[in-house]
Length: 343
Image (cartoon, rainbow, N blue to C red; front, side, top):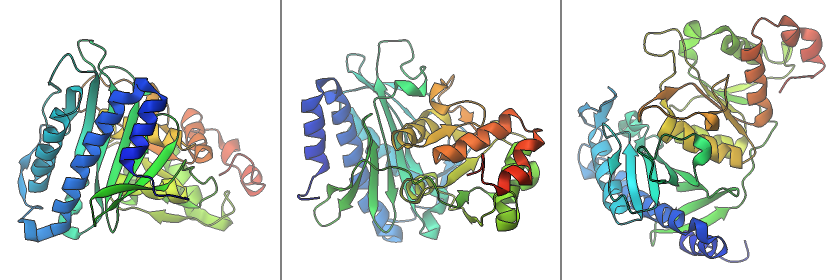
């Protein structure tokens, strides 16, 4: 880049070029300010207290860490100062009406991957912005109704992947002055990467289409894919998504046969919807294996969904396996070794 572009100037330009996005830009600015503040707190680690200590469980039954609570407080404070009518959060029982006259509805996970806090691994924030249409429930529509989405990774660098519906840009937090600076424009997911991310310890619980896909990867150059693959699993959705934006590959968190896992464990409204929007804006696809993520509408704040995303050709292949799991011709060595229908 010939000159430094800050998030502030980027949002101002977007709002000027498209006044319909002006409120969304203010919402993004509030989320980014909250993330910058949270990044400072996370960077202190145990110097900020026992941030990884379990303090209870949230409404969906997951362990709630002290830092989850602090993150929720920080985001609520910033979002109340933005043009936000309603919020939905992982850390709240139901969505909350702030001001019915405001134009935005924001769904967010203030601290994704909090089980990694004490391991000093990457954690993050995810947010989704849609119009507050005056409907009884502003979060009831499909994911395609989003007008902006982003996720932040708190790692060696603090990075923000952002879309306002016209591509994906990445900003890095300059910790010297707490300014977000543009570091990558119009990111596109590479198509040919040989990496996949899945929790392989659940193999015995998966449906046949998922097993088939992973078996083909494990068979490597001697199998129908005729190439070797590497598995990655960080256990942090934002870190997995950031890697795929930069290096390609595919992420799978399928539903499985365990009690309570039929619909996976990731949340549709504030995890799959925003990540799916960002992935599609970067040229990839996001699916349940049977349906496009952005076509789905949440019937409850904490609704779960199977979630598969990454390079388009890989997600399409997994979708085909779900549509025709017994179609052995699609899995035959003849097709695989000649490279047809494989990715």
